[in-house]
Image (tube, rainbow, N blue to C red; front, side, top):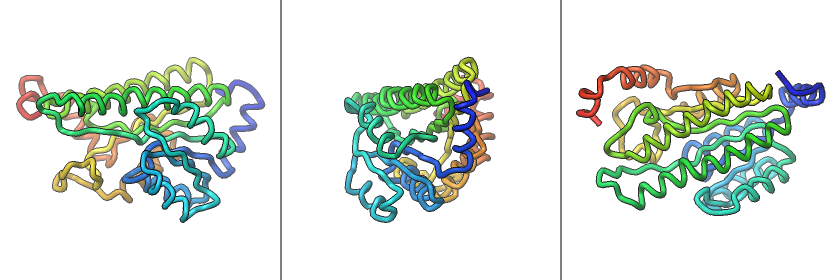
Length: 255
């Protein structure tokens, strides 16, 4: 339910017009492929990342559609940088939080644990919280987050990674509930990938790994359909269900 006739009119325009989309973490991997796909579709796309030269490379391909803002989600003043990017885009319809970090940390390496938490929790809350409040004022919008199948349960090899991804998924669910209570047309899509052919896959090339293009196709489809939760690819849903059902005594022996 929309807050007013004015926001309803804006929403109808949003459905048929060129969308304004921001992808946080678009310098490489899935984020870059999503940005490239949306720009090809004719949408206006704001992209962020730490490596400015990679952002500029993408902008060169779509000079009239791509807008860049170079920042690290672990640093300060990111909300102000996000505000300026929204201003340059002329508004915002969809925000995709794709920044993520995770490395094996079997010995609880503090640098890995700290960076993982700052990226997947602190930076995530700062950016997504700002976007949600923006959409509350606007009356509609959509947020998509790149969580993980790893969010389902803990993992001894990367404790902060699985815990931080669980945080993201729970936060997304909380925002969907909040949106409903506020009677705003705001959807938060929780994307839970399995292994995708990116650097973050850490060499897992044998178990149900999919190409970036296939993954992005499914991700965009889920966003367009305004799904709340989607596993990429769909067969990872089965893996997640098995993980949930495994008794602790069995599960702890394999993770």
